[in-house]
Amino acid sequence: MAKLLGGSRIYGSLTVDNAIISTAGSGFQNAIQFTTGTSVTYGFPTALQVPGANFKLTIVGGGGAGGGCNTTASSTGAGGGSGAVVIVYATVVSGVYTLIYTVGTAGSGTASANGANGASSTVIYNGTTYTAGGGVGGSGATFSGGGTGGSASGGTFNYNGGAGGSNAAFGGNTPLGFGYGGGPSPNVVIGIAGTGFGAGGGPATQVPATGTAQAGGAGTTGMIILEY
Image (cartoon, rainbow, N blue to C red; front, top):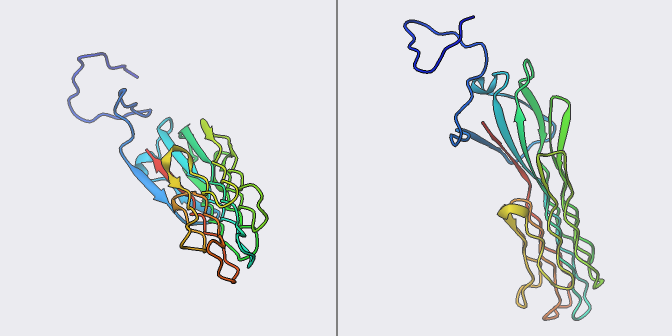
């Protein structure tokens, strides 16, 4: 097979045996976002079914909910932890043109109880699993610590989630700015939900006291971005 040198000209058709690698600085040209799904098998678009082509995955775990409060005056929960973030730079393997993904769901709050944990987001490609763990729910009505952030593993870059604050503090923020934890409010006894993706929910408080047990704020769901 002849090799092309710099300055060569082609007349007629050209068959390429391997992937044509983009020059430095060109980056990825396409992005697909997944916000729901459990054990979904996803087939690569035709443009990515090229051995040696590069792609990027951004994986965010679900956020934990804030802790609830009971009816006792000044009872308060703690903030939920955020999901982890995993960044993966991978290369397409010949004949392996699918991946399996799961998007982590968010934790929900319950009155007088700990917030529910967020679920992990995962991607499996060519036998390797990349995991962005979900955040842990905040403690409820016990003046205990906030939920810990999710654990990240398997990626090119792994960022553990942010912890929720204790005693009527905010939920954990998601690494790299993907989500922001919800907070308590003196005028809103139900915890405030997180925003964005993977954020921890805020805690419920009895300030002012209402005589009714309240639920912590929900975390936010995870997500996955495929760039190629």
